[in-house]
Length: 262
Image (cartoon, rainbow, N blue to C red; front, side, top):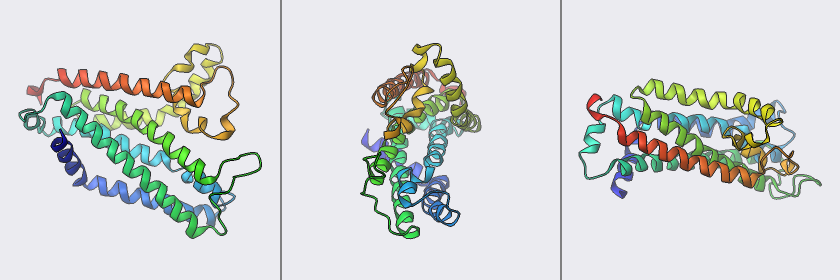
């Protein structure tokens, strides 16, 4: 199993798109700090770093593309047959691809955190990232940034599981990427619709689109929630449940795929 994961990581590393995603993550994290300072988009460096420049959506897009192609590519190129003749079960093959994508998510998250930190120090003056943000927010910019990146990492796992499910369901790499990115971009719209519906049907607060507010829920200003909204802890529990559910479904779909047609 360890050798299988190593092989998957090596294949991902040698993709040109992987290097592009890594470079773009650094550019967005570091470069947007300059733009924020130059055009006064944020009040100060602490505000920029606390939200990582609002660039978490960029790495979410990158990880959706990786997850959407990691299985579909094997079918579209016919290499899935070579994987299956090795002494590994389909469960191990699928799990190795999910773990590989998760490793990529961690790398991009750490890189965005580091590049945003570096950009804050370089382009903003007199920044104290360990002081409380304000008299009403008793959390430092560093603390808020850690909350943001941790919540977004959990969100990335959720997107990974949905994307892997799509990737396992379709042989076309282009179709898998298209559907994966469509779900990512439409999630905000679906989330807004679900928020409206939840005001009447409170039980719908457990729908998966509502859990996409996890990044806002972990912030101090989100402490006062309406009675039909989930708390940060409830969103974390719900996300974990949906992650397990999509993993099981993805594994079932992958186990039933007819390789002969690939």
